[in-house]
Image (cartoon, rainbow, N blue to C red; front, side, top):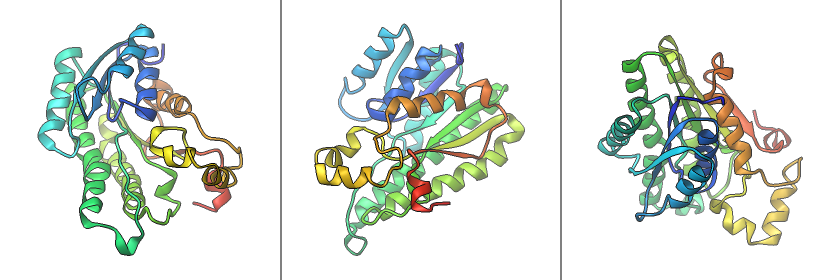
Length: 255
């Protein structure tokens, strides 16, 4: 198995892409800490899937925009599994409004979760990895919208663009410690965050017309890429974004 004896934390792992990554990591031999927000039991489905796959996991609640809670998340994970090898910044939120009407409180919330959160998590995870020695992996879940504009979603796009540069910059700084830092940029992945599009046949048809492969991506496909980037096979890759979008960005003329 590609991740045998590794310990990983995946934020926002109760549903969607985060859940798929946590389950895939466990199937490849990693012990996984599932970070979630919400009521107790929110991550039970992810825990059950990992248990059924024969894996090891714990569910921990943490607000990733809060430094103390991020520290506690890492401390509890290391206390349970002994170390930290992989950190996946997956948690993210979005609110859609026309730019001229965007509420400042929602803008600030998006920045706190989508940018401050990954900054704090990557910093705390890297400190632990440096302390341990032996390197590590940090994987950020970005979006095609780090390059591709999306009207009515300006703060989300801005945070994803910033996440790209955070990835590139800390990849250089952390390389001497054998810690790699990479981005995954999903396109249209079939998850709960896109429920409004999935429920509207006209919106869905318009979206599919923008994707050369003509279909939704699967969370499990993103998870497969995350497994690769977390494994020894990707030891010479850092500071990169891997888009997984069915050709959407290429068709749109993105960089």
